[in-house]
Structures are given as C-alpha cells and as structure tokens.
Image 1 (spheres, rainbow, N blue to C red):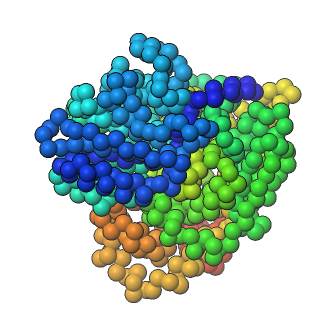
Image 2: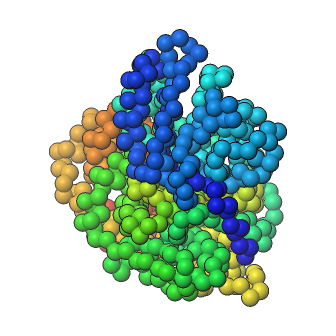
Image 3: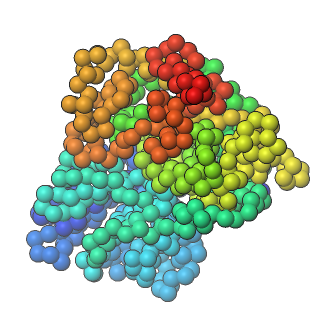
Length: 594
C-alpha cells in the first residue's frame, strides 16, 4: 500500500468550517454586518477556531452583500482565516471543504502569481477567475462554497458531487439570496429555505442552478465494464490515502464492519507503528459493533477506544441530535445519536478529523434489501437513486453529528474516482446469490473479494471473520436494545390521543409511528417553518431502501421499518414480542405462504 506524502507545513490550513453568505440585501451595511455576526453564532460549533466577515456593495443601488465564515483549523498555524480572496482582493470566497487536487489545479492556472495562504481551498477563487462557471467541475474534493465577486457583481455557489458537506439556501422577503452550511442560521430570515442540491452550482449570472456532475454511469446501460478486483482495491486505497492531508491528530471511526475496518486497515498501513493510529467505536454494553471493532483493532494494532452509552443517555440526547442534524428522519436519528455521542468523546481527546465508511452500501449494493433485487439493471438504478439521496441521509448524519463538536469526517467510499470504478462495473457482479454460492454469496462480495487474502501476496488486510461479516446498519450494530428501547420510550411518551392528530398536525410527511411522531414534534420545536419541514424527505423505506425498491417484495409494503432486522435475510431478523416486531415476521410468513 502506497503511503501518503506529507503535506507542506502551510498547506490545507482551513477545512471543515461553517459558511454564511447574503447576496443583494437591502439592509444597511451596519445592520447586515451585525446580522451576519449574530447568525454566525448558530454555526460556530462547526468552526470554533476563528471567524471572518467580508462586506461589499452591490452593483444594484441600495443593496449589498456579506460573506462570513467560521473556521475549524485542521492544520497548525494562526493564518488561514477566511474569507479567501482573489489576487485583486475583489472576489471573496467562503468555503467548507478540502480540495485534493489543489496542487495540480494550481499548476494549471495561467496566472502564476503566488497564493496568499497555504490553504488547499484558495485555488477555488483563482480558478473561478480563470474558468468561471466550470470551476466546480474541475475540483476533486468535498466542498460547499460561495464566491461574491465585486468586480463583476456576480455570486457563484457550488456543492460537491455527492453532498458530503452540507449547504442550504433561501430567499429573503427583499429578494436577497441566503446561503449557510446549516439551515438553522437562515431559516428565520428566509421566506423559504431549501437544500442546495449536490453536484450543482448556482450563478447569479444565469440566475439558475445547474448540474455539473452527471457521470454516464447514472444510466444503467453504461455500467458495462468487466469486474476488475485489482482496480477496485487500488482505487479505494488511493481514495483513503488522499484523505490523510492533516497536521493535527486524526483517527478512524471503527464499527468492526467491512467498510470502516477496510478504511482503518489501509490507514494503519501508513504508519511504521500502527499504535500511533487512534480508532474509535461506540455501542451499548456488549453490542456487536464494540466486540467486532475490538477484534479489528487488535488485529491491526491500533490505539483503540471503545465508548459505551446507555439507552437513557441516547434518549436524553435526541433533542440535541435533531437540532444539529436538522432532520426528523427515523433512520438518521437512530444512527446519528450514537455518532453524536461518540464525536463529543473524540473531540475531547484532541482529535479534529476522522475517516469513516459512509457510502459503501449505496455504491456496492450493501444493504440487506438488495438481496431481493430482481436483476442487475434494477439493482444499479437503485444504487444510483441511493447515491443521489445520500446528502439527505448518511452524509447529512456524518457531517452534522461530528461537526456539532467541531470534528471533521472524511468519507473515502464517496471519492469520485472510486465511484467511477465500482459504478461502471457491470451490476450483475453486485447481485447476491445467497449462501452456498461459489461467488457473490454475501452482499458487497466484490469489495470483500478485492481485499481477500488471496488477492495480494503477503498482504492481509483483515481477519476473515471480519472481511466476511454480514452487513449491520450502524443503528443496529451499536446494540439492538438501542432501537427497541427508543421505540418503547416513544410508545410511552406519545399518547394515543396525540398520535391520532398526526395527520392534522403534520400534513406534510405525516409520521407513521409514535417514534416518528416524537421526532417530528421535537423538530417542529426547533424549526417551526413549513419550508424547514419540507427539507426532509418522506416516503416508506425497508432497511434503508428507497420507496421504489419496496416493490421488490410484496411483504415489505406491510413493514416499512428502516432497520436492517426488518429483512428476513438478517441473521437477527425481528422475532420478539416487542411493539412492531411481530408485524414484519408475520408479513414475511404471509408472503411466503402465497
């Protein structure tokens, strides 16, 4: 495994942060600046190391702009505060992200003047001046940014291809345009607040949002390449390695499942002494993840930390989790709560960046419901749908649950090059044939086989029992009692009378269960605006499926439980007498009888 080259001391000083921008506001200069400063407080948890504000006049008389930033310093030094500026100082950039091809991109610029900072993100503002609207398509990284150019009077905003970094926008009553890393900063000032779509940019020049990321593998017919296990392995190793730019201590979130364990294994190989690498897991006492993670850490030799939480501690955190994650989606809150608790512990140890395994199940058909995919084409179309929805679910959870404590998460499975490698692979290679088959007997077989012992002579990535461990959703793996206890709590605190009013109280995405009603009620307390509720997707799901995939099995229509245990192929499928547990089992039996 190739080792990451050391980043120059001045490089990459500004990364995970909080951004805020208002374009063409009618507020006077002092009021606009004060408003920006006040709103920055609501996202300061994303960047507790520094702040910056840039105010400028619009070319439209009586209007002006502000670009603001909250900084989380991933590398040493006191420099690097944002906004970042063009050489003439007229274009101001506020960015949350990391640009992995910044060295190559800087070398391609016609303007060879030296940069003012060592930030990998400064290249964005200079590239904007040369490439204009095409700048986002030239970036390799995870980002959300806004540029306001006084020279042209233009605003340009963009978000990374998959939506790893969060971004919201909205319109003020005066016609102004607002942007922020989190909805909470602007919801109260906008007539309507919306999620900025990933893989798109907005330009005030065209007054439209334009898709820039549209790989041809989005069409199933283009996914026609033969299986290439070495290419899968080398592209993933490269995706992990490029994400190790950091001058502060970093670690790996390790659940003990395939995805996070592979990340940890590749990172550990970068160290002469793996004990220098910290790995972290969280779960209830005796949970599957804690035990599996410890086995992996012992095998890799990392400095491992296991954090135990109780069901009550999780329940006590729910309101804060909903406030920070800005969602009422059941699966996201179930999984986001232990991650939120873990992030706080990690930050307390002085860690500012972690790598994680999000994105694998979407690209590699890893969720258990994929076992029922009728054919390769439908499986591929579901993978494309799931990748397109990640910014509302797992990316949202990973980004906000960690940034709530000023901790940055990086996700190598969502690397553009790696996605190309696995998404152009013929989808028949991702079908699960079931136990006993010679190949593809388990979900994500192609990833497991690419890192199996027989693939690289003398290199062992993981123990066999971990490499071939069945998929566990994070909310399940931390301990099955977590979801069961959460459901029981919601059954107790939400009365039948209150739940009966769900359709009247919440006509948009009406909660289908008392658990969903409880989450929605807390969300409404934090974000009462109708448009805030509309930023959260609705629809039924089985084990994290899209609503479309529910049609793959007639029994699933009666279940619609996002836990992986709702799928009969799970080794611990629902079989207890707890509320809601019998329904999936009976539905499956009824379907089999037919």
